[in-house]
Every structure is written in C-alpha cells, then in structure tokens.
Amino acid sequence: MASFSRRTGAEMGLFVTEQNRGDVLIKLKPRAQRDRGTEEVIQDLRAQIERSHPGVLVEFVQVLQDMLGDLEGSPEPVEVKLFGSNMAVLEDAAGRVGEKLQKISGLVDYKAILRGNPEILFHVDPAAAARLGMTVEQVTQQVSAGLLGLSESSLRQADRTIDIRVRFPDQFRFNYDNLRQFPVVTPDRKIVPLSSMARIEELRGVNQLNRENLRLMVSLTARLENRDLGSAIHDVQNVMKSTALPTGCTYEIGGQYATQQASFRELLWVLTLALGAVFTVLVIQFRALAPALIILSAVPLSLVGVFAMLELTGTPLNVSSFMGIILMVGLVVKNGIILFEYVQKLNADEQLPLREALVQAGRIRVRPILMTTLATLFGLLPLALGLGSGAELQKPLALAVIGGLLLSMFITLLVMPLLYSVFGESRGADQAAESV
Image (cartoon, rainbow, N blue to C red):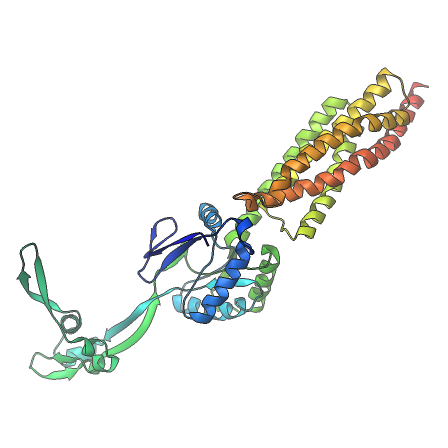
C-alpha cells in the first residue's frame, strides 16, 4: 500500500452520507513492486473484515470502475429490482430472495434494504385518550416534552446564548420498559402510564423509499468475485424463477447487466451498418460481387479466433471486446483488399490465369500483410498484457482484435485464395459460355 485516506459521513463523488457511513480510499504500489494483483488484495481484505467485523457492511470497488458505473447509472454489476405496492410485502420478498442470492457462488458485497437508526413509535389510541379527557395532541406534547425536552430558559455568555433544555434523565429515556410507564398527567391531575392509552413499538425503519416509474421498489445488489457477469446473471434468473413472489410483486434484472444488454443491441446494429458500408465499398472497388463476398466471409471465420482468445484468457464478452470485434472487421477487410487488388491487376494487365495470379499475388503480398498485421498485434500487446494505468478497461478490446487478426491472417492467405479460385473460375467459365 502506498497511501490511504478515510472520510466519515461522505463517499466517493463527495456524496454526503450518515455519520456511520464513509469510505477508505487506498492507493496501492505499482504492480511491479507488489506480489499480488488488485483483485487478490481485495479478496484478502474482504475475508479479514468479515472475520474481525461481521456486523460491518463493506463494499469494495475500484475508483475508475465506480466512476464509470455512476456515469452509466448502474454502479452494481448484479441488481434485482422488486416492485410492489406495499413496503411490508416487498421486505418479506426481499428477505426470501436475498437468502438465495447470497448462496450463489461468486456474489459478494450483497446489499438489500438499508435500515436506519433504532426508533420508538408511539401509536396513541384516540378512544383510550378520550376516556381520560385528553386528545392525541395533548398526549404527544407531554411525551415530547419529557423525552426531547423543553427550552424554558437560556444561559447568556460573552459570545453566544445557550438554551437550557429540561427533560427526563438519560437512564429513563433510553430504557424501553421505562418508556412504557411514562407518566401522563390527565386534566383532573391523575397520573396514568403511557401504555394504557398507546401502543409502543421499537423498530428500525428504512432510510429512504425508492420508486421507479412511480412503482415502489426495493433493490438487491451485489458485486462479482472470480465470476463472469453472464453466468452469474443466469444463476440469478434461476433463483428468481424458483422463488414464488407475493401477489402483486414483480421483478426486473437491472444493474450493469441491463446496461450491457442495451449496449450489445446498439453495437450489433453498428456492426450491421459497418458490414453494409464495407460491402458497398468493396463492390465499388472491385466492381463485382464475388470478391466482396469472399473478403467479407473472413469476418465470421475470424470470430472463431476472437472467441478462442477470450476463452483462453478467461476474458468475458463485454462492451469493450465487442468494440474490438467491430475494429477487427476493418483490419480483416484491409488484408483482403491488399491481396485481391493485386490479383485483379495480374489477371487483367498481365493476362495471367486466375490460379497463377493468386499464387503470385500471395507470394508478393504476404510481406505487407504480415507487416501490417504484426505491427497491429505488437501495438496492442501492452493493452493485452494490462500494462499501464487503466489498461484493464481496454484489455478485452485488445485481446479480441489480436485473436481475430491471428486467425484472419491465415484465412486471408489460404482460405480466401481457395474460395476465389473456385468462384472466380466458375464465374469465368460462365462468361466464356455466354460469349460463345
């Protein structure tokens, strides 16, 4: 650890909180100077705090990750939103669902309904108070005066005036049994206990009531440890399907999963537009459909390399890796253009047969294809290794591009010429037959 700071009554982003909440910001030494990674340090600290302070609610999050989550509006990876019309029903449902969610492997830092400080409620019975000749307001005034106190006088000092508050002693006010026997003076000067005209309840209420689209909501959140988001959400969905919710209570999966799904849909639309634009450019470039389709065929084949690299490195398919797939499309198409543009030149200008033109073009173009591909791979290598500040966020992008380019290089030099020789010859034979 290089340094740390602590704040009480505040959290990251300068959010003011209760006095029993705060944050501890820890700055670790550079990775080269420590034996463990950030996630390993977090796991160790979480286990130590759970053993030494079991009643403390702790959430571990990296600063940049927390800032991005706040910008997205979904700071937690896993979030189950329970909706209903009654808070008591939602609390019961949250308790049943929460017990099962905490048993899912890889879910940590679970949070549900945040309770406030202990409270004591006095439910005065109007009928019982009326029989003693009192109103609910009169009973409330006496209880408030005895427990909270009344400022009947003040002490004047040189620089300020201090109110003198008169109330019952603390040993009386902080004892639940004494509060039940709180002496209430009736209009006829009789003293009766408060319990004879009121129901006294001790509880811890919720800090706040959340609503979404005008629906009362309880949010159950958790973070992940050594688990990818997709498989964890699959287990969460199985839990929700197997849990019978009360009548009128519904649920939704939110958090970063919902944001990720929305981003995937938008990125899929962007990928479709990119493929359409690339196909149009290829048709204009080669003035034929066959070369354009053959070059684009390398894109789905290269996806095998992308997913294989993500699987080998244990990297999940997220927004960053999806952006790598879109970036890979342009790089793969570029290699195909380099090869086939020279094939057409040899076939048209030097009148070489198609197969001979493919062989000669492959022999000549293999060097620029290898040079550009290797330059891209080595340029992305620092990101793929996670070197530098913030490199973890772009690591999936780099791995996706590297996996796709490694396979596409062989597809460009081996598979594309084979396909072009087959479809190109058949197309040439058809044109020859038409001319005869």
